[in-house]
Image 1 (cartoon, rainbow over the protein chains, first blue to last red):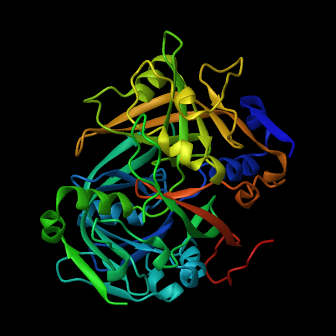
Image 2: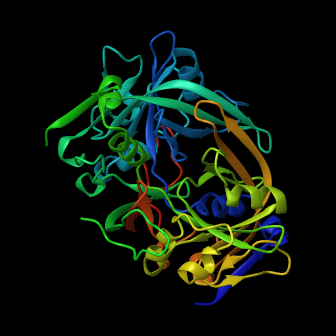
Length: 213
Length: 213
């Protein structure tokens, strides 16, 4: 295959939307999640995010990137105000409805109702989970950081509850993602099915690499 | 399948390593990349990172999470000092060697040599690319943020060069990741092959969702 080598000037010369689509695609495979929150007056909100990032295991922290706050950002406002949000992984069967949550609904419309997902409330947790999702996390607000370069924010939450199919969790803590048909995504609109190639042992210098299982 | 519901106390009761493995797995599918840098005295460094995150398209920004700086962090030091790093996507054929770069080599050892990758220098760019990788990005240092909760850092870079197979880039900016056998990963040690399910149109309230292509 012929290769392309794009420099800064080539990127800047592209039509704005073409460049945005390209740059959104350049981070490769991600794991989209539905973030569930609730506002002070009890209105539930559900939004798809594809910028989930592992921050650390001890304490258990995850982050995501929040677009600039120049328009209403229900997820961010609700998470910050209530202190809680849920992350709900998306399966192949759910991915169309999950994508539809990205439509710009009015604040008074719950995306749960608009796309047909069922909110579940856990008594210890002030945010709605998605009943249809097989893997769900409950997060508590930890901190956020303003990224000066483009006015976005890194939002960091602490994992407080984990819900998943029992066979997915192995004794050593390893999760078998092949057991659930959770999708990966690229760009803003493309969804993928993934399949395990290998699990590799901890790497050490001067030791041949071993495959686990 | 029976479900597990783990609360904070269940997580804390797990042996430390089991909990770390579980939490590392909970962010789902990610896109591991090899980050190439060079030190002031010309020593090349190559390290696998699995916390790549899209920050924004305009300007084109990507981020990754840097572990605490309590031990030597060659990638972070070199990127900050030189102002440049490269991100090199990992194919199925390369994923074992890529994983091996996570072994704790001495500072005087280049992971390029240790695992058998070829560094390529672009004249406009002070960091080595991986010749064997089909998709490579050149980043310039933008900013970093200290995450107080666990002493890690979000490192943000600006995409300055893009190298990829020409057929991968469509006219509208969309990238066909199925054309290259780039791997996804879960946890710290598991690699996956991905395959496209669908590309969905921009979602609007009160409009049925369309599939693109």
